[in-house]
Length: 415
Image 1 (tube, rainbow, N blue to C red):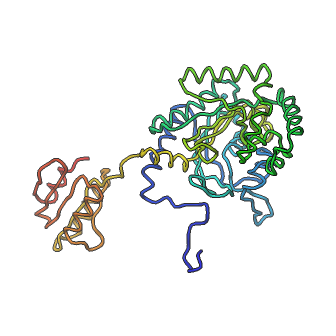
Image 2 (spheres, rainbow, N blue to C red):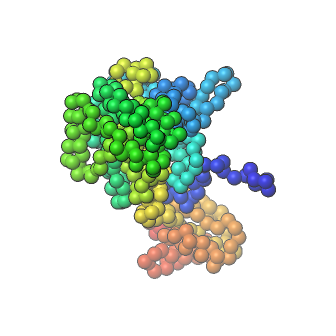
């Protein structure tokens, strides 16, 4: 609320206006069609969860837990958190409903709002919509490649061409401990190049130092040991297979040895699709493999992989390349002269709408000329000008005007 007493949307949120809806609906409809074609079933989880779910899975030292969660105590004294990401709730549902007893992998997706208290910036909101796609129950590297190909296919169908796929493997519980020992030795010897953020991240998890914002620190970390040089044979073979399948899909990628993502549950494959701007603000989608997550929240040992893709950020990519459907057109717009009765027109519109036509008329007392102008602005395919029930003019694109009684005119209206 402003000092003048006018209400505004809360900081970090936005209104999706009618003009935004055609592009938004086009993108989310394409996401749903793709998920169905790839065998992913829709799941909807609550907008808030037990706070401990995110503390345990994201990691107590993660930025999400330390800085970004909307956490509150309900009237029963329970600590709850608005959903900051989609993977942990979906895995919680997988365990709670015994999905491990179904044929594996279980393929799930959702398009849902997420909440993170972060500094608002272009394409990144505190309340944002995310497409989460998860495949739980298989460690097959071909599944990693399929997830990556799903988002690649979304970009292709929407026509987005300005993107890059960043790829890495961060190993697993077998090879990561030895790597972390070498990394900590390097960080001890180069402590002077770290800033306060890097030191804080290192204190919670040494891998997180690669996720710092400072370009100076990032440049210095380019000389630090890389996890890719320390992968065990199984992780190395898995990553090689993932790259081979991506080559089979003809999906270009760039290996980024410092791409670690920011959550504790990631193992092996990590990835991001980024836009042309570069940097964290340009991320279109990101995710990776989380082979220990289901077990961490009480389920059986279960591998999994998934990604989260911001719909708001995708809208910017579509706008940047001027992509999207035309605004919806009205099928029939009724223009009424002053003496024309409204009752027959209202009945006609109700009948046409039952038959699947989009219909409208004037409700603001415009002149005939003003009504025609409004019909043209609405891109009406048919304009029905009602002088009287017995004298009605049908105007359609690419056809001559036709004058007849109202019932005869309506019979000539075609979708």
